[in-house]
Amino acid sequence: MGASHDTVAETIAGWIVSARFPVGSALPIEPEICAELGVSRTTVREALKTLAAKGLVRVKPRTGTRVQPPDCWNLLDPKVVEWRLKAPISPALVSDLVELRLLIEPEAAALAAERRDEADVARLTEAYRRMAAAVDGKGSYIEADLAFHQAIFAAAHNQLLSQLTSAVGAVLRLSFELSVLSMESARAALPDHRAVLDAIAARRPEAARGLLVKIITSARGDIEEGLARAKRQGEAIPA
Image (cartoon, rainbow, N blue to C red):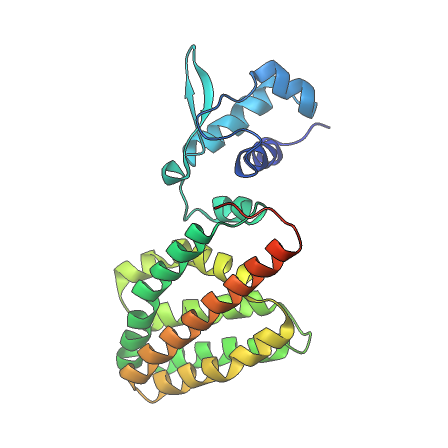
């Protein structure tokens, strides 16, 4: 059985994010992709449609399929985030990621502290419990951390912010994947997350806002440390 078009899309996306085919270059023609991947022409066409819908490529008659610049990509799409994680991460992406988090999360936390109900506090408490368990090897820390931050958005009770949760969730997952260097670094982040929970439960918006700034700033430091470590080990980090 041949690969699915989703698998083929992921493979071609890997070619793009790793710069095997740089921005503006043409991908191989369909028969060449079929031959390399051992799949049908229909599968390749469906894969290219997926990539075009996510902005990675542009398909035009006579000029072929060309790689689009990253600012054309749907950067908040969870699959695009997943694909980018498989390639070296640039300092520019890290800066943009941190800026976006600082713009949104501290204010969401302040709103959550003002508007939360008991169900919101229970949801945050459960997510924190899962984070604490995960540092001892029980469950996924990143999934628990993501649930905690998404619970903050939900507690803000802003319908437009709620609509952003899945998109912002992709950004958060990328941030967590880059910043959680070890379970020890995750354990070190627990007190600040507990303090956020307590501030929201106690309806202290200024405290919640400040704690989110602290958490995000700390995450930036961990990401930069990880990038520096990768560079020392000889991995390619784009400028």
